[in-house]
Amino acid sequence: MPSVNSPIGVFDSGIGGLSVLRAIRVLMSEEAILYFGDQGHVPYGPRSMGQIQNFSEGITNFLLDHDSKLIVVACNTASAAALSYLRRRFPFVAFVGMEPAVKPAAETTKTGKVGVLATPATFQGALYASVVERFAAGVELFQHTCPGLVSQIEKGELASAATRSILEDALHPMLEKNIDTVVLGCTHYPFVIPLIEQIVGERVRVIDPAPAVAKQAKRLLEAAGMKDQTRGRAPIRFFTSGSPSEMKSLLPVFLGESGEIEPVAWKSDSVIE
Image (cartoon, rainbow, N blue to C red; front, side, top):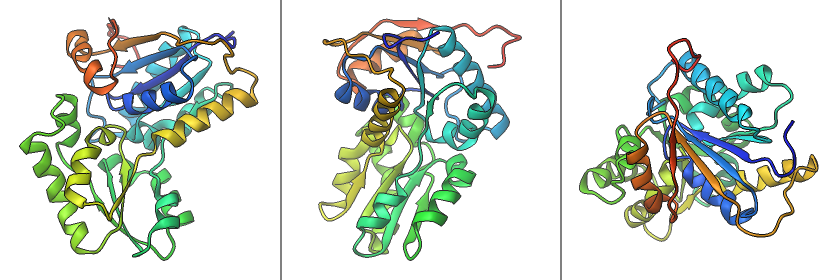
């Protein structure tokens, strides 16, 4: 059984979840973390709900086998497709998922017009529809799936001409509609906030959901009496279903620290296949 000293498990389709890990690290540096990047199957956005649920279940089993005391689904697409499924499948496990930050955007917008950047699976999911129904009454939402942006970020191209072009295609029509807020509905996207801010200007607020997710993780741990009280900076263990060397080269760029990457070779009869 997990203890207060057990790690937090965090997973994403690739390196996007490092934006959430970074926020957890700022808030709870004393917590050990296991991070799984499913780079062998990135991106999740175009995949079916069944595939994403299978991937998410396999990764959850892996993290639980490594004694995780809390699972953070640091992927909007996986949260939209699989979070409810995971909670049913693992009823005794505490999960924290992602949802587009439509609520704070709706509460603070002055123009009543908000842009949302997310993957197709996130927009099509029941979770997004529920958030919009509950919190976006009277607010006009402009959505864009930013095709190719996740792949650009996975390559570490955070400020290239191609990345800028993708964002300009998404944001310029929204700016013409007088948006004053941009919601980031994919954990990869906070890594291009500087580029987004260059495009939208100072009058448009960009909402990164990662700090709120870290706070929720802390609340759950404290409520369960599972918060690690050890002082000091705890280690992170990194796992990938893709190329360890590629992931390792990106850690200093995305996280500001390096680490050893442990490859995970899924067996042919594994649920992850």
